[in-house]
Amino acid sequence: MANSEFEKNSIGWQLSQLQQQVGEWLELQTMRLNKNIPQLPEGIPSWLVEGLKAIAWLAAIALLLWLAWYVWRRLEPYLMELKTRRAVGRKTTSRTSEVPVEAWLKRSQTYFDRGNYREACRCLYMATLQLLHERAIARHQPSRTDREYLQLVQQLPQFQSYRTLITTHEQLCFSDGEVLSETFERCRQAYREIARQEQISA
Image 1 (cartoon, rainbow, N blue to C red):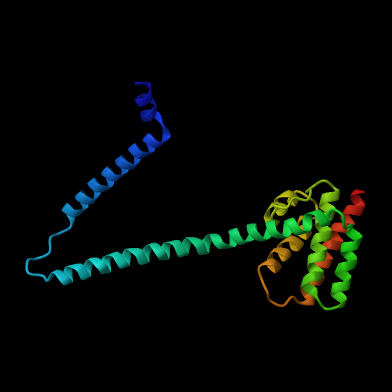
Image 2 (image 1 turned 90 degrees about the vertical axis):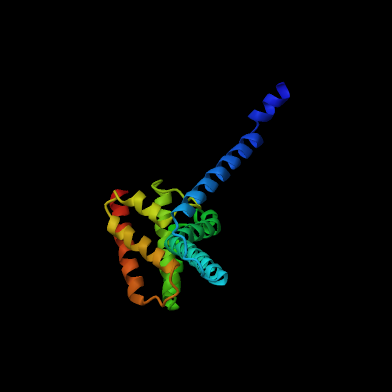
């Protein structure tokens, strides 16, 4: 008695019951659907009926594939950003806390002198993150995204400058296009405004 009671209360038994109920419900829905489909006239060749069924199935599968593709295209930028942030965060977070702001600024100038504006901008971004870390506004975390950094700095006096650096970094992560010196100058000016505010605060 106790053994049969346990079998009826086990997860496996409950799942099999649920599976049976879902199967019965689907069968009932299929029967209702078949009743509502108009009957084809007599005398239509069976190969034509089977061909129409195959076309209907192909259309349904194509619609499902298109829907899956559409949803993926909509979610892909967010998934890629999260993946990139985690990968970059794992590589840089441990090192970032060890690299002082001045070192990031020197690296930025070195890359600028070599004409590598992409890396020069990235170093300014890293210097900014180090400032946020040192001021305990946003401690280094591997999973933190640029959008999360923007939320954390939106109440700071130099929000527009932070925004320039963070959004530029975000764009550079998802673009392989050429980075012009004007982009770097815009980032450098934004960093200078942040640094000026830091000196006032100190």
